[in-house]
Length: 128
Image 1 (cartoon, one colour):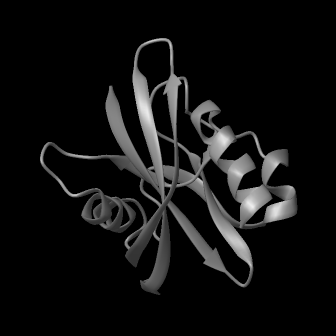
Image 2: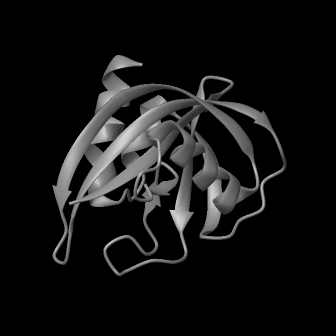
């Protein structure tokens, strides 16, 4: 099982989603909470901060664990772990995504989300 961390970043009562432009066919072109794989021995809070810096050149502070979902893709099983993060600084520079949007929670499930992200989006919409 692969541990993957994802960032829940709010701005003006909207949440950040990004559309994948890299990766395997299971996620390519899909919207997601941005993040990535946790490296061996790496703290999950530090991993999400590192991933957001790598993918967007943004600095965030990971605050707390929100929810996780284990999902089986055809070639792998991931434990997708969502962390609430606070934006600190930086301007968006896209590396692994073709677009990003600040999305109203009422609209989040209208996006073509990566399969593993759908249960997280439902949780966030209902409880945040």
